[in-house]
Image (cartoon, rainbow, N blue to C red; front, side, top):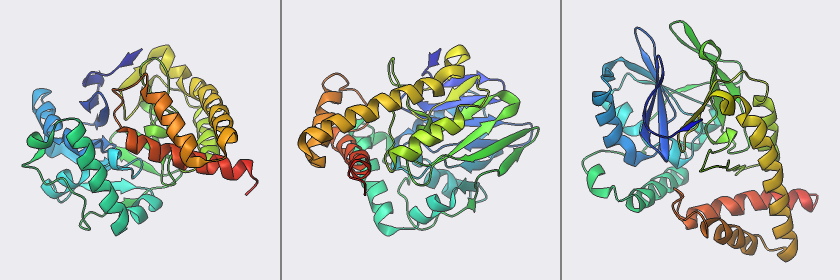
Length: 300
């Protein structure tokens, strides 16, 4: 079952934000952990939801970044500046990216573009949402655990969607937080974006396949529960193979990455005009994937 409405997922776990941009709050008796950072424009709604759901904002002591793409780190600057003692965790590669001035500029530019697309400029105008060089935190890697009372948030390195992607798994509640590295549950399908390295993306899906999952908490379009959650990764593996075959065929026809990216983008938006990304950003993603596919096909 797919659920995109913010609210309680199960005892001690909340989905916050908006349908197209979700973050999760994992609660223990004494402290709480935010998992993922969503898009910057969800800050006003997250603040409202914390009040509406009776969640004590002062108990949020930790925040876990699953990867450093702009649409997954948007709330971090506001929460860190509002709560200076907030502990922020991310992979070593994510922290490298978040210290690059060019990356920060791109993050802010894309965030503003999406804020305009979602008509949230006025709502966000009073919040300090931009990334600057004042945000730092701790490194987590494969096998690490973030302890939260009786729960252990286990870290798995799952590169491919991005070079900095990690996933989080909480065995006590059989819940997986794979960010986009596990596939995006959009409409009735799963979007498989292996932006930086499609082969590693597929390998990471295989790595996640063996986990016992009752809740699949995606960063876009909500969470999945029950039997569908149990089989979600297996289904994503199948669709990732089909997507790769499609990209290979389109690229083979033209041998032109830009032309192939344009064709993929036009094909997707002809039936999915409401997708969260702008076509321009989507085309950038397609070029990244196709570049890797083309290099592998050419034996480079």
